[in-house]
Length: 181
Image (cartoon, rainbow, N blue to C red; front, side):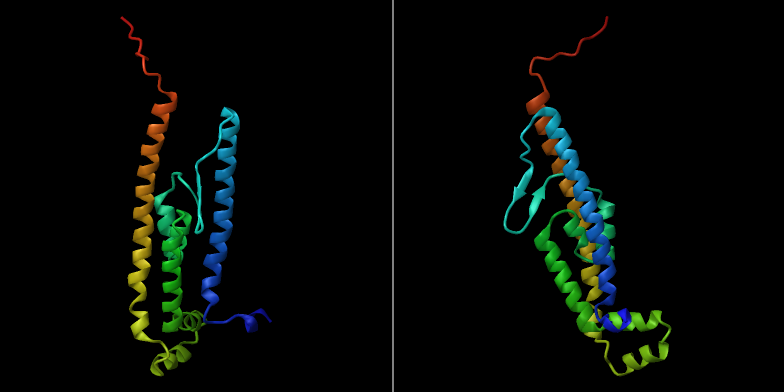
């Protein structure tokens, strides 16, 4: 009954979205719990968040290869991982549009099911639109590259901001290292 309900046009987009939702909710929960522990230890006010109409954002260190891997699974997920919502929406919307208009997912589905004659007949009837199909690699590799580079840059910003914070709040001006003679 489930096979009859699933739309072949969208069926391969379900698993990456589901996997990312589970992963991101777990990772976000861990991050928020760690911030709570740090704030509770110092009895500090946590002001690391930026809440606006498009996103809830906070500066933290991320792994660039994880962002690239999520974008490789589906363009836009790497940008969501680093909280770049407008860029993620752009990548996801265009990728889904290109995949839908090119009829790529039904062709992949029938290939995986071993129905090669049906796939050949799809190609011969020009159901797969080559114009849209040829644009997919451009957007796909752009999303991977952009998520990786933005994660590296955010990590540099995090290191710079953390160094300023530690110097401002924890470095004593008149401290001198004691030297042994």
